[in-house]
Image 1 (cartoon, rainbow over the protein chains, first blue to last red):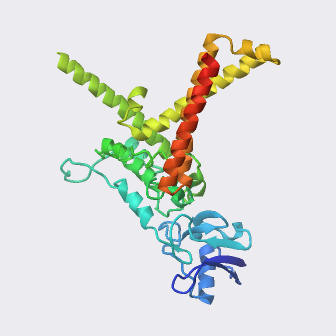
Image 2 (image 1 turned 90 degrees about the horizontal axis):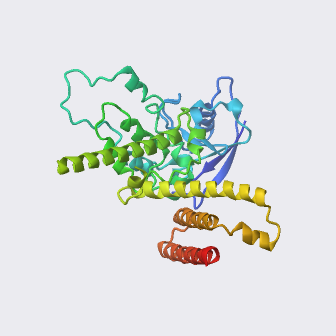
Length: 246
Length: 114
């Protein structure tokens, strides 16, 4: 099977180049990651990230024939030859297919992706009704592979300002968590013009998500919550005026 | 509530919502314009003058132009943010755009109400 792979070693190369490989695969090689490991047997200078090899860790996300995805769950039989592999776009390349995800995780951390609950911890656990738990479906499954965020043009142009689809989906995941108490702060945190509203519904994120999640829908729901927040603020202000007048 | 979201308290939502509301105004005007065009079918100069004669239509046209200007302002400003990384050049372009939009606005006002 033929491959064309992006190569760049900053210690040696002045600029990146594409290297061709023609590899004989075995019957057991079903996924792209299998083929990459076969190539690595032939040329151990090729660098890539990998870990769980079953679409759970999100390490081996890369640009496969022009579309971001996970090598470990991409079937070789679905790929056109030569398979063109590049690092995920929009992030600095460390070497070959390995990118520096610092910016991605900075943006992710900026939405406080953890539960904020100031009540004293209960003896056992913070309970949720099955209905409230169901609200997290389609959100908590994100493996932070970065495929969505690095295929988003809004992130390419404003990586330091726009949070990106992965971070925004995790922001929404905690906003709708019935155990979380920081809804207002979370919404305020996304109010700067470029953090949330740079999303122009291009939908690349939805197209590439290897877990079939929908960050675009989550972003739209954050805007709905914004409307609800404004309604609440207005009601509170009204009550305040009424109390004052009494 | 919409007015609350258009205040300085919500800078991001204000721009986003303004762009949607201006888009809505333009969409409604466009439907009305096509409808009037099909009914009145202005094919010569005097017919076009009659087309724009009613005061309410001139007012609607002005509202359309205001919405268009706001929509363009927000949209092109975003495009500059994306594609013009040099802050000084971007500031110049944004100012030029603003001047151009105000000139067009004055021209449209003069044409419609003058």
